[in-house]
Image 1 (cartoon, rainbow, N blue to C red):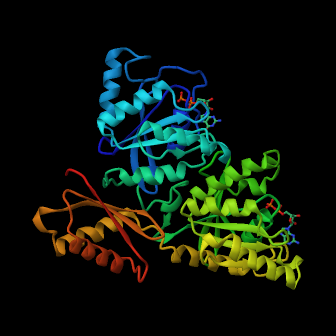
Image 2: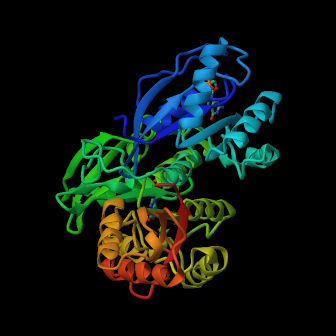
Length: 447
Ligand code: GDP
Ligand code: GDP
């Protein structure tokens, strides 16, 4: 446990640190304290994201200068922060940058810590514009998050684990385990369980489609606690292998979301997308591609998730309208590139059988994330076959992003360009990336 990298969560009281911590750790027990300014002990809890394990440290009421704790505790907290591999500075967009935030930022800049500034309480996209104030902290672009609803936390965690040193730890939460809620890292006896989020505006036919997909002739393998509050993920056996539908409980228990606003389902959809490998964006062909469909598409795309576009209720429209809607997809969802577009009727079942193969293709085509362990095996083999010159060494590597596959190499020294090309070639061959462009990023780190 002590070998795991440490992420410190800091920030003023009441900005949402505990809520975010719960989100990251994925525990259900409420450890949020409603009272502002409650001083808590530092606590360390273990967390895991896409197969990467780390410790999260909540520094409680710590503030530089010891405003709420005595000096000794404050010094300890400062040392803990200086020693952390990354720091998440949580701020509250609804109050903006305060003097305390600025003081913490100054301290962090001085420490040279790897900092993620979180603009918390962005419960509504309209609040996103407020976060740009945080640029004044001089710690880079802020990450919009709603710790309460979970929106944005997936992106944050993706970026966070990417900067953490890679440690090889075998254990129950490691790669290879099909632990619930582990999103992109689910494997089952070497076979991958794809996670699928069905998203779309209300009434486009998501539940109908979901019911159609799980069908009478398909067995629901199991329902497991999902990654989002109140969610139950459903794993379904299909001819193409098991598929996990993320956060689909709301669809089957309609009443639970009916009282929510449209925005609530938007947030929920994004949460589901964060935990999925691929999203089914369901559009009501009868209404065409609306502004909200566009917005949802943009957000899914930004989350780095491949999309299969479903034009539902296709049977309700005539030839002319069909042409119009197809044109709209090309125009209004152009940013989705050549995502597969399926024209179906969830109600009658027409063409629904084309969905599962399309999902599998989308995931493949997107060159899904290669497990960090495999990346490191390939890099180690490449270095064994041909070491880099002048004692340069890649300490560890990880695929930080997909589309295009982007690998981050952490090295002790500068790696010469020809060597990088060699490593790139090895990665390309090992993961059958074909003509797909690959990006390599190199970060220097002392060994
Ligand atoms: P801490 O003192 O920084 O640990 O803050 P808490 O996690 O205890 O949260 C303080 C309050 O803010 C609680 O009432 C939370 O429910 C609320 N809160 C936390 N995150 C969010 C969020 O994303 N949106 C909203 N609206 N409230 C939040
Ligand atoms: P959700 O809110 O996105 O989950 O939408 P529902 O699945 O509840 O569907 C909303 C309405 O659209 C219901 O009355 C469905 O029967 C209807 N519906 C769903 N799919 C289709 C379809 O393919 N064709 C037609 N004509 N109606 C559909």
